[in-house]
Length: 333
Figure: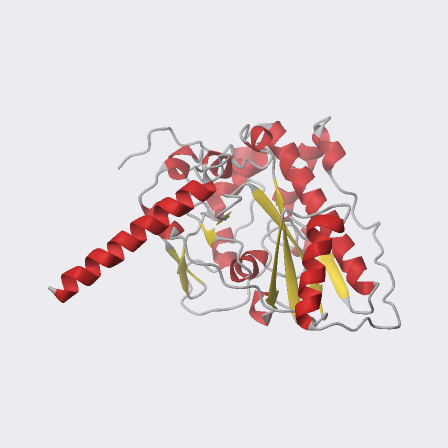
């Protein structure tokens, strides 16, 4: 089936900023074996292949009179000292207390919290993470602003969400440090030493959608993630019931057709030994670089619209239950 909208073509002045190596190669597209991912973006620009593109994006943001006010200055944050005396609680009690603080007591409260035991495979290449647990925090974005993507109003909300998430993660980390345990808070888009998507999925923050972002049963795709790495004794989040995003995305073309550079493919791809939804980095990034971060795929996703995520969750679970019942009946016959 053909696209209903024309494909955007990247201007030469943007393509000239790109390195010889493909971003898809850096991400491991087509690789049959699992490996740690190399950071493709949002690091010191001198340390990554696409540093010139990142510099261009930064210049675009800082040249906008509103967006430049949303950008965090590098550095400038010092975590609180770790208390000498450790507060003693059971892992279950710490789990409850962390959630209560992050969701309600913190000045920068989160919308959702997930906790999972850390896996070293989630760390970026070359990063040795000395923590046992990762606390995931979600910040809900305002739909009215997000729905303007790829206009600058949506980019402003994305930045505000990243800033809120970073502030929340640092606040939770300081709360933990005040109880005598190591903790570090990290916010997007860099997210520190860890790739957050697989950790967030494990912690119950939804399932991966065709547009390469998470889809949650409550938040849809309209949220951003931050994280706290810690050695505070905690409890794994309960694994949620599946809600079959794959089945929905296979039959949906909305983000595929809406993506200006046609970076969203209709089929899953092999990436570092795993078959999953994957957005073409080399097609996405040029448009991202000239559109204040785009975000059109998330904004237009049916799951992101207010009050739709839970309705679609119920629909997909009912469809799956009917399909399983029909298959079982056929097998009996």
